Image 1 (spheres, rainbow, N blue to C red):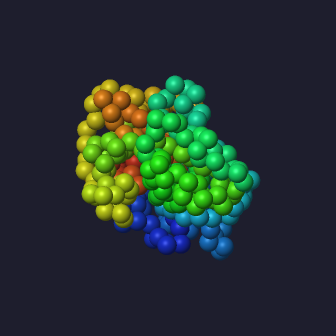
Image 2 (image 1 turned 90 degrees about the horizontal axis):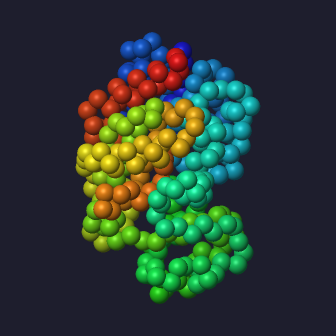
Length: 286
């Protein structure tokens, strides 16, 4: 059995945490190696499975990534998560589908590609502050937080972007600065562990590269069950899913369900790497 652990050009050897998967899989007689998803010399048919891990530039190469997904699908190479899940999850309008299934999401306006962006016509009147970002994005890419009173400046700034990309407009929740964002991580649809991420003072971005502060947490049983219900909306196999949201009054307001290349925070939960490998084995040998 040979598995390709998919990564990107700036992380050719995977992140240090994901590099640990290689010796762990070797214990189960599985040869795993890092492979750059858009490297021209890769012979994809050499692999029995591909696992999406650090493809952290896919949103910067939208056309190439979509073409590559199509190629892998035509070759019939099995992937975890599946290509069908990747194709759905890479565009954040999936949040609208979840909302239609009675999942509580951060209040969101979905803006389809347009040459005539008029934020004043679509921002709810009670919003004081908002976040705008592309629907095909990750890691705060082209993301802005702005006071609604200053929307004209943002409207002008995003005119060109709106003509090229679908956008999400979301109400800014001040709880992100006080309570932080909580990520609940599931392997093979079973809860594994959770992390809370808070931005540094004066910032809204929770990512560690922007000074975010991370800590392992144990959410309430009620919150875990809410996240489980979100994961259960996926009809097919799911090697991993990271449910990201703000917990307000013990209720998740969903921000994202990451099923492409999320950090799984192995180093914050003892045994999580082994649980992840166990889930890989469950799915490839079922």
